[in-house]
Structures are given as structure tokens and as C-alpha cells.
Length: 59
Image (cartoon, rainbow, N blue to C red):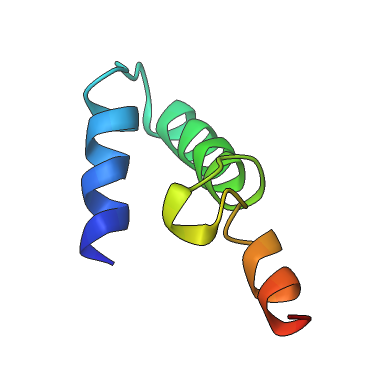
């Protein structure tokens, strides 16, 4: 979890400004979806967090 929050802080909060709470909620939701489904991680053998458990269990 510490790694995720560190990444969230550096990739999301430090790079964006939000005009409203609703904008923050929507963009945070979009970022979490991106993080889980599209962002590839070297530690996960180049897969996204959603892909990794599926691929790893088939090995």
C-alpha cells in the first residue's frame, strides 16, 4: 500500500490541480482505473495489476 500511495502522490496529486471535489473524485477514479488496468509494472513481469494474478496463476 505504501508503494501505491507514493505513486499516487507523485503521478497524480503533484501533477494536477482540482477546481472542485467532484473533479478530484472523477479524476481519482480515472487514475485508479488506469493504475489497475493499463499501467504496466516491472515488478509484475510487465503486466498490469489486474492482469498479473490471472497470468501468474496459469504458470
